[in-house]
Length: 68
Image (cartoon, rainbow, N blue to C red; front, side, top):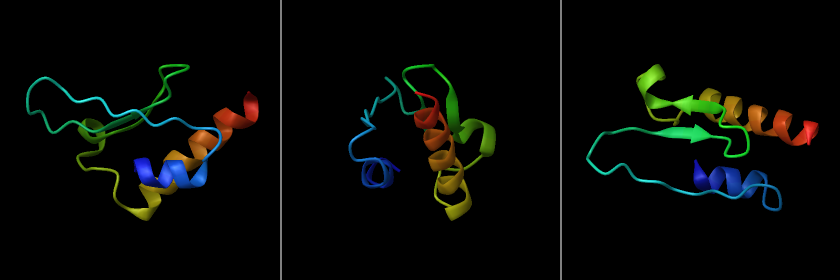
């Protein structure tokens, strides 16, 4: 996901990985500016690996960038 976001938005997005202290299996994509949760493995039951999931995250980032 990080590579995709860096490729799609090279000048507009900074990707920061944060690890949980324990092994949790969590995976989230969050807009740091607003705290908006764009994707969560806990709510979907899977990592963001399908084209549909990736497209949804990119569309949400695009919408945020268009507003700002």
